[in-house]
Length: 227
Image (cartoon, rainbow, N blue to C red; front, side):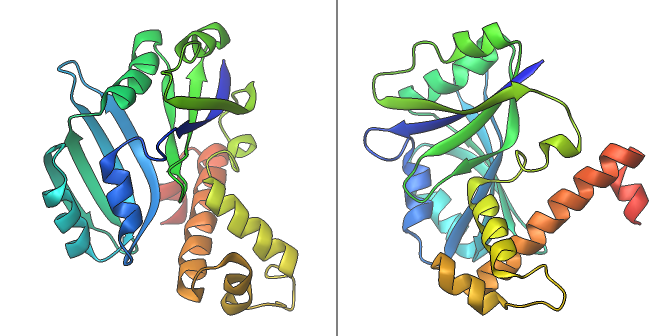
């Protein structure tokens, strides 16, 4: 079994008006899309994770014409939005490939500030190649990583978004994980053009992702091992 990670960029910047609306909101930070799937009726679903004001998330969803229905849940650190919507033709075509060739979309799917999406597919290599062999003309698709898929700690950094990998690398380079600790959230934030609280939130999510993956890989159940 193989995996391939693709960078997908729309010529207009954004694949969907929803992502553009979230990006324009000053009090919302997009973390990831944990699930995205094309349904048999042509509609699609997204499970978005965001950080910010839950009321703003609901306002954006209410004002976005393509949304059919949604549910928003406030988590301890994040806001989760389960969204049922009418995808734009390009997005529908993009989601049809994995569905047609029986591929798994390995979440989370990350969306950068410029609208570029990074998506990892798991399956047979020939099927992965076929799924993205003829992308829509509006899309630029670039292969970023490809290899054998081995669940477990080998996939730790694949499970992190590009922004999370950037934050973790910068924290490590500056000495955040040295003893004694050499830098603060403020120091890291000044290098990454974000707030100290955002750095703290991202590092906690990164650490949780890595610890859970290690515990699941070695002991079979992260929740039981950590309880």
